[in-house]
Length: 114
Length: 111
Image (tube, rainbow over all chains, first blue to last red):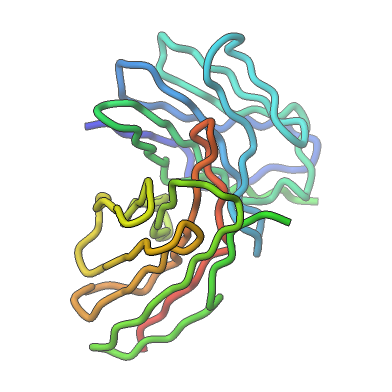
């Protein structure tokens, strides 16, 4: 069965630390990849997406993610986090197996200490 | 501004009651979705609709029902058959590039 794994459920960092959130998926075909973010009290919003081309994609607020096809991974990175990055982050994968289907990871809660 | 409006923001339900969650969009998107969000489990698909008057079950449809009589509206009914309805419910529509636009959610609590 197709699945999306986010390795860390909770991450605590100090401001200015570097961030990497892992995301792996299990599906051998063509995928579209997404990271969504949910700030406290706000709705889920798209952070960045990958469809094709350059495997390093840049999103809003200084986030980027790298698609490594051989590792089935789409890890999210930010060189220097801020207190305002405190949020829950969800990786999502859309596949096309007789119809488009999106699978979400369980989410990673990031807390950034000021 | 275009977007998705969910109401109410908080909803309390007694055991054995049916409740309906509202979802309205003014984005002119064809496809709409209902997800359930539980801590540590991510988002799970309840129902989706790709066109008016048509909808499909998702992964956890038991105890839920939907309708899609208008393009703008996709209400979700949580029936008394849903054994564990306390959760955060998210409505979304899909953009042309398979990304989602989400509403602000409804938090349902059984009392």
